[in-house]
Every structure is written in structure tokens, then in C-alpha cells.
Amino acid sequence: MALYESTGPYYFNMKHLYFFCFLTVCLLFSCTKEEPVTNEPPVTEPPILTDPPIIELGKSSFLMNNTSWAGQVKAEFLGSVNGKKTIRLIGYRGFPNNTISEYFVVTDLLPERGRFKFNCYCDSSANVYNGTPKVSMIWFIGGDQLLGADRIDTTYASSYIEVLKYDSVQQTIEGRFEAHLKDREATGPNPYYPTEVHLTEGKFNLKIEQ
Image (tube, rainbow, N blue to C red; front, top):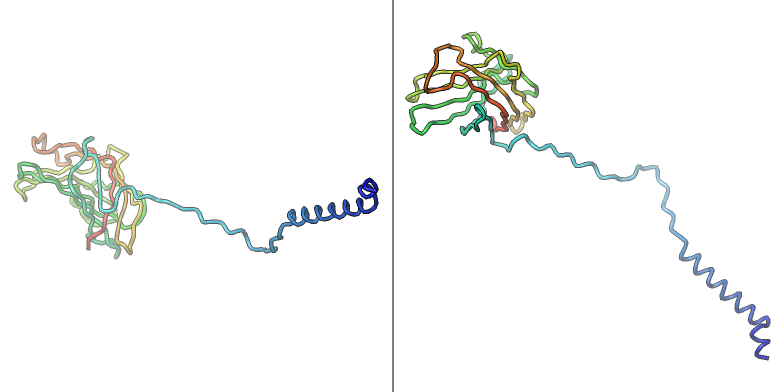
């Protein structure tokens, strides 16, 4: 009787019931919820764009004859061309004896992006504002007595100034430059200032003073 009950119809019915329950559980676990169909594109995070400044705001630097220049440079509006203000970069450093002062000067720089060559600046007509940048190193003795000046040497094709950014709202200007200068007045050797100057690796990022 025990053998019959373990192998009879009751046994097969229970076996089928267990199998059906097992199959149902498997189907429940294997089912996944379908995502709603949409025509909208997938959401993606925009790329993070970084554009670091060439140098920290309020700073400038360049090499003068392969030596770091220790003066401070500022930017200011000065003069205008066709109603557009031009910018002057001017830097100063004094010497320990307090008798000689040295100035780095760029004038006639337009407030717009671009790469510009320096004007010759070799006669008085070059002093007018025409939107072509000019560069010089100037030395004074005793505070107000002109000692000498070096201006652009046109035999070097690598001299330039480039405005990388100009912000008319924040009133900032950022750029770089290289300039090769010489004593265009031909006053002869002078023990107080060099008659040839190479300005390289120039960088600036300045607030423009009104």
C-alpha cells in the first residue's frame, strides 16, 4: 500500500503541482518591467570645458635678455583710434641706487583678440595712435632725465603681441608677446642701459585701469 501511494496517481499529481509552482516562481523572477517608449534623446552630462588663463589675473611676466624681469606691469586706456580706446601696458622697476628707473611700455594696443606686429616707432610720426602696437624700454636717471630708449628691431621677424582675451564687461585683457629691441638713436655704448634688449616669454592678464 505504501508502495502504491508513492507511485500511484496521487504521487504524480503532487509531482506536477510542485513542478508548476517551481515554474511559476522562476517566471516571476525572470520578468522585468518594460521601460516606456519615448522619442526623447538620452540625457547626457555636458562636457566640462576648461580654459585656464595664460597667467593669473593681475599678473605679468617676461624675460629680459634671458633674465626674469622684476617690475610690475599695469594696463590702462590711453588714446583712441576711430572712436575705439587703445590700451597701454606700462611696467616699472627701480634700481638699488634709486638713481636709475626702467620702464617697459607697450602703446596703441587695440582691445580686441588678434596677433599684431609691432610698429617701427623710429620717428615722431610713429607716436600717433593708429592701432598698431609699439613697444620700448626706456631709462631715466635722477627720476626725470631721459637716459636712453630701446625700440623695435625690425630685423627680427618674431616680434609680436597677441591678445588672447578681452573682456569689455570685466575690463580685463590677457595675452602674450615677444619683442627684440635696440637703441635706434644710435647714441653709442652706454654703461647705464643695454643698447640691445630681447623680451621673450611675455605673458599678461591684467585689469584695465580707467
